[in-house]
Length: 514
Image (cartoon, rainbow, N blue to C red; front, top):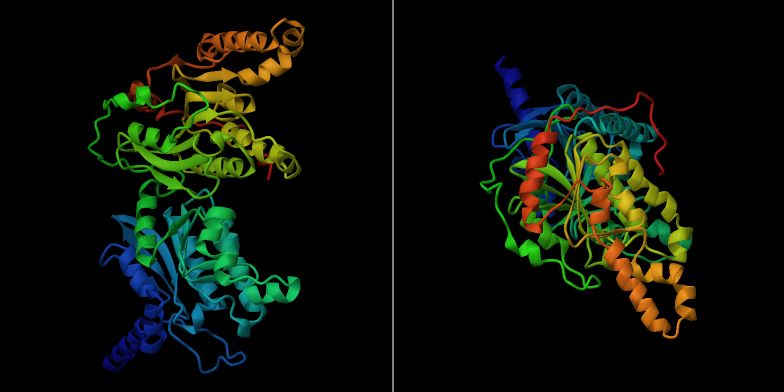
């Protein structure tokens, strides 16, 4: 037995050393942690239980006979984050470049299956040079095993992908299928085909960073949801993000004690909206005053900044927040913001997180390119997402709710539960200037003073239509409230709706306007 124990300990020690001191040192020189160092930051101390730690690749394929490492370039197991169980895998770039193999897939797939069975989140730390070419089609089939389970787990348990190094080719699809993608600035990248192949095929000359760096996927493509400065920041953000989510789709997110008075009143809210409705304001300032202090966590902050999607807390309870941002493109809806909002609403609905919408939107962005690119189809996604969502849905109209944007953004017709409006709200089919051009053009032209006639029409239209009271009279708005009351009103509404019975018509699935 002593020889057997000695052999086991030797194998375990070899597994802990990864690809060896030289490769670990190279990883550190790039400003990156190793796979095991990352897990030690992510997980509660002493909570990690590793599985498959001694498994090497099981082939003698081309150039691989003498390259057998315990664990085969990925560390898998279970642990705890702030006392809550999670399943994890961390690719080890020091071992064969973290290249994806059949054994890697078996280990990761095993964790995915157990995560779904146990009803716990799955966190993946990606740092791989891609498929292991020496294994041929087996490495491609291995990717398919993981992708299939990503889809099965979607909406069942939260899935978080951290891109902490290269992620290229087929490897990018697994993170893209998960709920959240976190990228590290300067050291992580994602792309289907690398710069060299692109140059040979299209003639385009682009760097790795400009092709698939963290800023690209956070600002332009929308593939990633967060950008952070380094490995440690990515791991700490993961802990924070999971605190807003339940363990699985049959539970509720945990309530935290924030110490923020639910009856707190912020007088500044009464003066936040400018008197001139053409002047912008920062919606983030408004949200910071309404929700528990310091609890706002923006998702996809850099992408489609004319819309805000975020997690926050009200009296310690997790909520999803959707809001227009008047300081960016006047808060209009366009193709990118429609995609951003609809995906976030569906995510909140999947994990039983109530959705609160703050509306200040003049409508959809007009333009030939928007129409050619399918703004109708993309805009319909918001309608579909809100209509399908069965979680508690509240909205607050702070200023403009014009035309189709009023209907799409959590209106009563979209199944909204409670709708509030501030006295500054403007709920109408169109703005005053547009109405004047449509309805008063001939009368103004026939008058002695067309300019004054137009001004009189606009003033009358504003008085009759650009206010919340007609909508309240018709029951489209439940209550017109003082801005200072917003926090308390939302907390009380959620107290009632927390036991809302969630129902849906029986069907296989609808046709989401993708």
